[in-house]
Image (cartoon, rainbow, N blue to C red; front, side, top):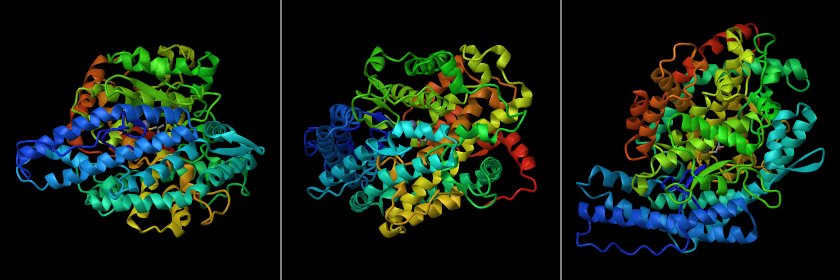
Length: 612
Ligand code: X8Z
Ligand code: ZN
């Protein structure tokens, strides 16, 4: 698989990543003497051009591989990926040399740092290493894409089993799906994963980082150690909110399933939460909804089905939100070239992603869309990536990226927060008479919190685990145990059956075999509320925050576009300030949004066991 760097792409927001058959980088031919700012400028210009040129073909190779997995496309993708990585590493190492030069311009320094630190899968420069890493990465990624679990003993593909985890309520069936998926998909990847860690760390060290985790943490306009502290601080601020939700949810699960399935104390059984990874819990809203206030009278997925929406119509509705903000419609090619539903006759990577194949406007999404509420949100999420990509397409190639990767993940989610009942009436999905009254506010917030709040500890622990693996603090013989410990510590969940070191549960989550860093989603979860609070303020909204929709607001659209158009050209606090006025990523806006829910949860939880 094409190894992506944050230079070209977020795995989920894939600007044309890199290049197959790229010309070997020639030494910079320039009159400027080596070690001078002019030589650094010339190197950056040459590297930027080479990468931009080469990125388009490689993007196509990756697209074809991920939408048509065969041994042949795997081989082509592995080859293209190796060539990309080799070129990136070569430029990265040269960038490190130029960074020693005094008197560099701010732009040149920023671009050199991007070249050195923005490689997500750094391979060692010795011959053959990039090829080996690329082959392993392609194998892991395609193995995931082709993975099957079972339900009632019959094989079920990834997108179907993901949806079934949200719908099935029989604990034995949930357990079967959970165990089969984790055993079949995760466990066989263990040795490949360990090998990839060794290779990537060797590469990261060559580029001057202590390990790959430190390299990943270096992409936030602050030292890696400070980034870790910033993330921990956000979590510390929001942990009480999560604990309140956990206490309440465990109680409700115990009421539904009884002590034998879900005890009143201790961790929650991970397969009962409506999601294969227990990362978002909104699918079991029916299980936790309080009588009266919790009866919302509608479910977005049911509304879509009732109104006869198909996946393409869902995407059109998503596009319509963005155009209502004054942003241009998607190009015709988007509709011709996207993969919106799972092809019946071939293996693909179903995990949703957004692409810009020509770095201009060859925008596409790749999804295996189902008509349900999760995928309605995911469509808005992916289109957020596409609109971001197009907004920054005038930037120099090395700045064609999010202000940081959390921004890229946050745009579409921020837009989807505007999918309020009122908005659903505006687009004709919900009847005016069905809009839940103010006494249903707690229910609306609980439905939203089951997705948004529940995600936080998962969003954090994915990379806590990888940071530990890359630093060597977690050794291969402890992969599973360390994973289980982090799941327990942060999420308070546990596997439905005992796990041991023959398993490899991290491999059963897309981003581990896919090599996509995950802290971005944690950041996005808080950033989206910062954006939303700011947009609602700009729109002059006066009511409860969660009822605000900025649908149709051109001023919000204009300011959003201004922030997105900056790409990665400035440190992220500048971009954040441009839209929100603040220079800090913080959990405050999210805590503010959910404050009425927190109060209500704590009332419900009185006298109930809390923690695990
Ligand atoms: O991977 C994604 C997107 C593609 S960038 C669908 N997300 C994370 C996940 O599914 O684990 C969005 C939310 C978190
Ligand atoms: Zn995304």
